Amino acid sequence: QVQLVESGGGLVQPGGSLRLSCVASRSIFSINDMGWYRQAPGKQRELVAAITKSGSTNYADSVKGRFTISRDNAKNTLYLQMNSLKPEDTAVYYCNAATINPMLMLSWGQGTQVTVSS
Image (cartoon, rainbow, N blue to C red; front, side, top):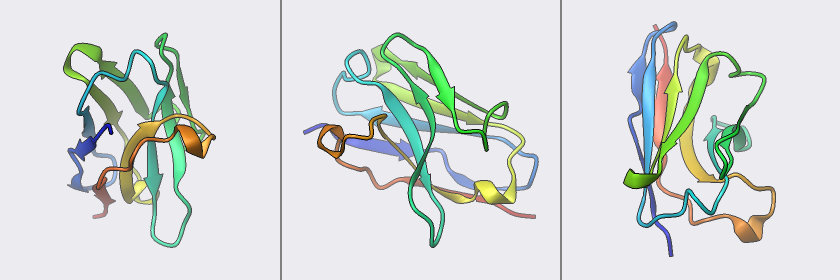
């Protein structure tokens, strides 16, 4: 069972930046498309950024141009660089397999809270 541990969240002012990290307990990034999800209070969890096994990236329209997903296979670590943060980016952020098939999802980590507020 792969464990995912997210970190790097915090409180930041609008326009600020944060870099999130997700460490996997074993090497999976070369065999899984991975993504960053977020869940705001009262809303469903949504996929905001994804990176394929080959390194191609995709972003939700709401974060395109502001967020960058990357990974370091040697460190089993997935990153999300978030710039020009907005209050509507406030959510708990999680990493997991980038898939719509629930059978292919990994166990969810605890997530990391991002709060954008002045």
